[in-house]
Length: 101
Image (tube, rainbow, N blue to C red; front, side, top):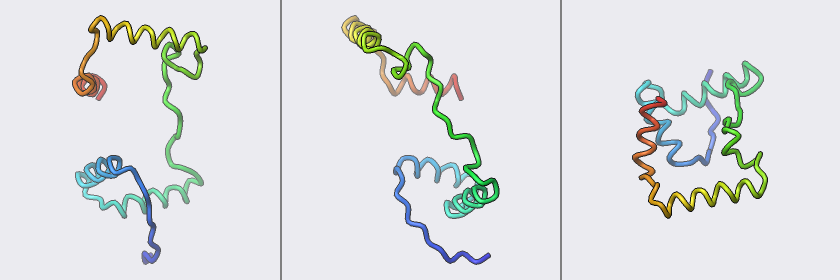
């Protein structure tokens, strides 16, 4: 089928860059990937993957906490900072990725 429609999309530049890196490794142009996605939507009658909220542990899920519980967690964090119990975010994310890849 001939491609005759143009889509203009606004997306997060970092998300686009990361997607392009993956698609490049797969040898798939972005336009082909989007075409595949749209075909899957029409074939399945919906988004072709589960769209769900991440499951946060109850102990850190602010939606399930009272105001007092949130304040207590914040105070605990401030106390850790004052005690020097901190770490570089970049290094922490690198360790996380290594253990959860």
